[in-house]
Length: 584
Image (cartoon, rainbow, N blue to C red; front, side, top):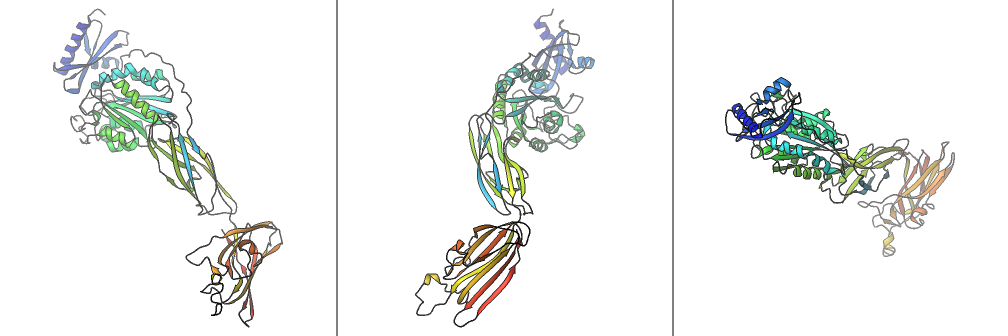
């Protein structure tokens, strides 16, 4: 170039002062570029001192002539300046990492209706392995006041994207300016690159950021955040943790009304937050830079809001802090061009490696059987240490029996920040309905006491007689009228045992199995007080009374016969009846 650097600088400053109407200006950015003709030029941007978004840009050619950027954009179109070439970088292959494990690794339950089982499921998370995949979307404020930050990020993007070479990280890129569009802003949000592991494309997208526009102080980030959360064109990978790294130096207009955006509804801090919470949640890592208003992203959005005339001026300070907290992210303040690269590396690394929210979640047909999981989640798990996380799981039979066994399959999934990172298969069998033939059985001797024997065998007789004095016997006939073999199991719950009431209210007794047999077609068998000793021991002495339940896989013909012989000269009585089976 023929002109000295000083001459070009003076020409640029003079031209910018004329465009801004004051000599009180600050040069905020200078970048090399190239016209469509191939001529090398320098773009110089400045803001009015104390007004970071009252800005202008000029382009200085080799002769030292300075022309307004707007004039050249009218001639060549926006984005006509070719950025400096981005050095090619190889795509990194992530190294394998240990898996998340679940103990026990499988489940196979048999759960009849109302039956409950409890277990402890232990999830082990090795350090620095979860989530196994992450998408990091870089969202920058590219209004003019951000020029020094954007230049620093463009210069250091190689370092940022190569800092997580051991993980499967894909990088997306976008930037935002503000409404109204197309004047004075070309767009409010520009999606540039869907998450990719091609680092060359990432560098090219970041290198195309051009600091310009903005007009008033608040910007259009609430619209940009909403688009990143809801637009399918963003291209999030479905099985990746989603991290949005958002940096800027001014708050966002709130609301962005439909009249100015063309969006279906008004956009507010609340609606943007809800969109980011998903599911799946997008973890927001917010960074406030020092290049704009003092509180940057957390500043009062009503201050300096001047070009949204069709919208109500509203909103409250603290947008970035609130949004980051609601999505499990963070908000870092006071970042300048000298610290932005290290800040990005530190925050992105922590977000990728840490787990904000980990849950154990049933999926598939087994989900209704899980009636509680305690604790409901583990939160804020650092990525640089191992974690052993126990969950207490309660399983309950919630399905009625049917003619055949019912089998339900699914899994217990470990979900970290919305992504399944481990699963264990679960099978639940609801047994087929059985036929229950239930009857009372009464055996042995019941006799009252008199003065001569009131001290004898006190522990074997009931002061309050359940039955009158006498001798009792029970016979139960069991017949298989079908053409199928029938498997049956006999259960007995003793309520009076050896003359003592063991099951009188409020006490209860569990019916326990004591015999199992196969009854062929046309075969019959007998249960009586003699065979009942398999369940309770000898029954020929003091009174035994309880419930017999014959459980079979087919309906049987069951008849019960009670015989009683009263005290003294009382006659013997006999009573027989058929038991109607119940299916359960």
